[in-house]
Length: 343
Image 1 (tube, rainbow, N blue to C red):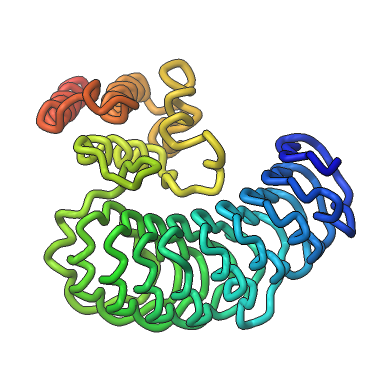
Image 2: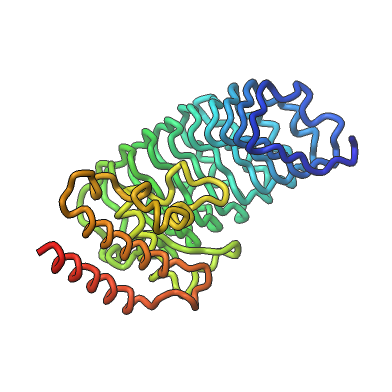
C-alpha cells in the first residue's frame, strides 16, 4: 500500500486499537482521519514514519497514553486534532515543544484531555502559520507564558475551563491577528491589560469565571461578542451584524458558539437553523418556554421572530444580510409586539 495517500474512517463505530506499527509501510500517506469512533489504546511513535502526513484527526475517541513527541518530526503537518480523548502528558507538556518543529502547522486542537500540565515557554516558538490553538478542559495549570505574544499568526485561542492562574501577559499585544480569545472558567487574576486594545481584529473575548479586578479597558464596549472570518483570516465588512445575530442565538439558547457539541460542519447557526421554525423549542432555553405557562404562545411567537432575525443577520453571503440599523429596529418592534400582547 505504498501509494496510499488518504485514510478517512470518521463517524463510524470502529473499536479496538490502531496498529502498533502505525505509519510504517505507508510512506505516501497525507491524510489520516479516524475521528468520532470508539477507538482506544496508545498512538505509536512510529506514526511519524508516514513522513508526508499533513492532516491527523483522531478526535472524539478513547485514546490513552502520551501524545507522541515524534509528531514533531512531521515537517508537512498542517492540522492536528486530538481533542476529546484520554491522552495524558508529562507536567511540561513536552508534546507542545516538539510540535513547534512543525513549521507548517495551522490548526492544533488537544482539548478535553486530562493533560494536567504547565504551558512551556516554548509555545512561543510556533511558526506564524499557526492560526487555531485550542486546549480547553485539559486541567492545565500555571500561568500563560509571556512568550505567547510571539504567536503573531494566531486567529483563535481557547484555553477555557482549566486551572490557569497568574495574569494575562501584556505581550498579548503581539498577537495582532487574534480574533477570538477564550479564557473563561480559570483562576486568572489581576487586571485586563490595556494593551488588549491594540488587538484591532479581536471580536470575541470570554473572561467570565475568573478572578479579575480593577477597571475594564475602555475599548471593550467596542468589541463584538463573536466574529466571522474566512480561511484567509480577514474579518468581513458585515462582521457587526453577523456578530449580533450569533449573540442573539447565544442569549436565547444559553449555548455558546464554542460549545463542544459544535464540531465539523455543525455550528450554532446550523443547529438553530435546522430547528427553525417547527422545532424551535428544542434549542431555546427551556426556562423560557415551560409547559403550563399561560403566556407560552406569546413567548414562542416572540422567540420565533427573534430567531428569524438572528438567522437573517448571519446569512452566508454578507450582502444578503439585514443591515445593523434595520436589525435593531426590528428587534425593538418584536419587543413592543410582545409587551402589547402580554398586556
